[in-house]
Image (cartoon, rainbow, N blue to C red; front, side, top):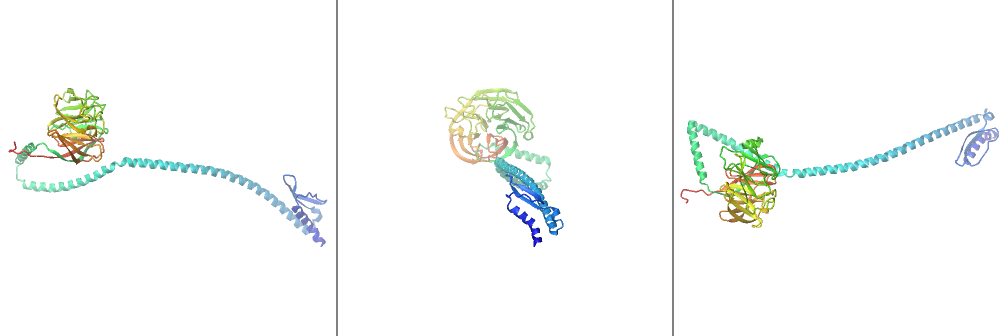
Length: 457
């Protein structure tokens, strides 16, 4: 029993000191202090004392207790190391937390930027789609043209077979004899055409796109009085502030862009409603109501005359504007000019003029507002008014100078490129020349004719 008590006494001392850390217990003589700790106020937290080794060195229990105390000491050191490592890890975690907050902010900023970029790209795509919308009817027209070309191919095949058959049948004929027969047929055809009186507009087909060039507004034309060997083309880009006229020897040269000659006019023009007639250019002089006749052969002005009371410089233009106040044109019956005056309340006025002197021969006042007209042209003495600036274009008003009467009609035509700024009739080719939003196009016209006979008076 005494031995057991002598072994448990140090253990009890460790336990008591651990339960009452605030007590200050001094070690008795012969006892050794192994470890101690104090709080912030200097109070003892834990003190471990044990007998000195020489007191119980021979006792087995004393050795066990000493080993146990050494383990406690080692554990205390391990705890200190673990505490230091924990503090270091805590600081690392804090640093990582700050970095995570920074990354979170950057990710949020990137997400906002991404949304902004997506919205901007979507708007750009939407704008591009809006720009491409006008091409839809163009593509539809290309589809129709492709179908027509396919039909043409089939007809050409059939015609080739027919021609082969005819060639076999006519193989015995002499070439000179066939040539004379062709000439006789041509003369008969011309004689028949000479019996055709002026016709009434019934239909407009096309357009056929000849070329794409220049600005949105301009004029191009051929001479209706030129010989069959002379098929020159004249080209005048823009509706104002220019004096340059380009000439092309043939339509093929015009398509290829091969300019044969360039003219610099003495005066700038206004509008797009010019005309080449019998080798001369007729146009409206800039900022005036003067009509100028310019000879391409001599390179000089042959005549110029003010059109009395005519509005000019966007006073009475067509609906699309562009200083299109005065429109010079020609048909089978001669030369005409379409304009408006204050005396006629801004309504369309038609005058027939002498091509040489530019004198007004006769005038007709209509009741149609010129500002409400898209474009106009003359065929056989009848003025036709269009709404050609609209996509659903049509001819809807006709004024006859022969009877001084008008009628409302409905003849649609295809405004392929959505903005026509020039529309003129060529009597020799029975076609309408047009400048359609930077495209030079031709419309074919169908006329209702009355055939003269020898019995007619």
